[in-house]
Length: 246
Image (cartoon, rainbow, N blue to C red; front, side, top):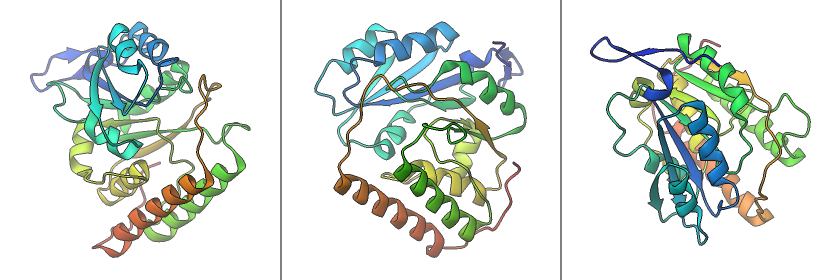
């Protein structure tokens, strides 16, 4: 895979992997995190940051052993760990890649994501194209979210998954202050409002190496929090109906 060079503030060209920060939320992923970090380092990524959210196993130790920087976040959840991962971004970082710690993201999809970085501010991995990528309830939830966002902001997304690449300047323009469930959904809505260039790229997931168990009550609470976040954006101020470049 050929990594595209990035020009920094001084005009010097740096390899993409030297100018990309990888943020990996991880909770009790001791069985997978070493392999996940090692794969990314083998691809050439220099800056890899694992956010350990309340693990009671050796997730942090194994992440460090694989060569990652580890930060601790006491409050669990994607919407808590991702903002923590954006603290004190190293100088010269041009892109941030959000990656799963459970082994479900396949590095072979990176080329498809990198191809879009030449003309995009936010690149989202879309897993829905492959049967079996999601449970029926997840597909239904994704469909509802897509309808709501299209109704409110005029843009139809196929996916709201965690796998995504965002340009550093675009992240600053979005001004992500949301902490909680629906963080990735809020990011996409804020990207529409900021008139950023958005691309969705089909990606093939691989079988998870670990199993995440969520009760119906947990799922209901998460869904309620996401709907509240969307409602706050919809009713909380001026909305921009824009068609993002797809």
